[in-house]
Length: 413
Figure 1 (cartoon, helix red, strand yellow):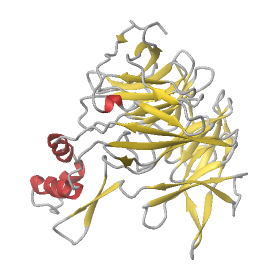
Figure 2 (spheres, one colour):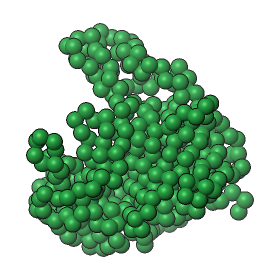
Figure 3 (cartoon, rainbow, N blue to C red):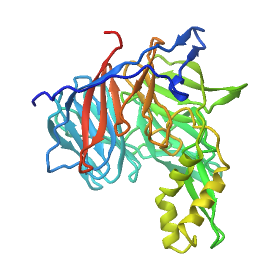
Figure 4 (spheres, rainbow, N blue to C red):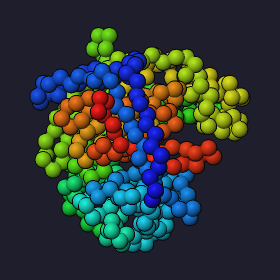
């Protein structure tokens, strides 16, 4: 593939409210202070994935880079996983739609197990399929995942990830979905029942949903709360590192959130307490978000709300007028699906929350405690990071998604 014309995004050193997110981060084990750099690094466009017309992209759900530079991509409406070589050229499709061996009904997460095995979690079949990364051949599957439910026997859980020690992670949401238990299952087999589980962490998800009362039917409308301060989970694609982002705890005029880092292979855990400067929400941003909600329009069409203005007013009333953005972008169900990236070395990338879409800032804490910041164009959606390479989804003039590959260009070099 020919090299693209290089475009460099030189990043300003201007610091705004949440742009100064990582002013300091204290690692509890070493008590060292992580200071943010005065200037910002740059992302330099290097290449793009070559996607054939026969497999057009619609929305990239997840992208996982291999150790050899290969890439595995899961698109929202494309059956199977798309595999690309180290030059970004399409190679093959792994898996196809179906319920048989090696087939997928609803793939929703993927990652690597070692260097030669790709795992794909199937939400509907409650299994994890395994594939050879070189040939695409099916290597069997793991599951189903079950856990003991109080007074109800064993319940079926949706697998979330496979860790580097070959354990399977699943989430037990509980009955009220206010607490989620992150469970790990050892020695999974194709039809192994009665698996023993260990709790990796318990997530507090109390603020992740927004309950909007509706004037008809006596029910309510549940929406994901983009201003949630719920705990969140992120797993590095190779399964070596698991991080839990705890909800911020007020401390005087400042706020703090904690990042717990689990090193799976070493069996170690540390924590970073991160103070940040809260960025105030503007009333116009809240209203713009509420007015764009498709759920409100659907409720109006169903006659639940008498008008769109009434629906918007109900949503804003249920929000209780939050004053600040949350510190980390969270578009998932309280479990991180976007906004937090981890590379194989344990470096963490945090997307700074901004529903107004006027900024797209990322703060990075490296495995050795260095902090840097990136500002990227608002239309770019970061997908994955590995070393100094970053993958992002962008849209062309017709709204078609493209995947660009960037390299990190440190400031001052």
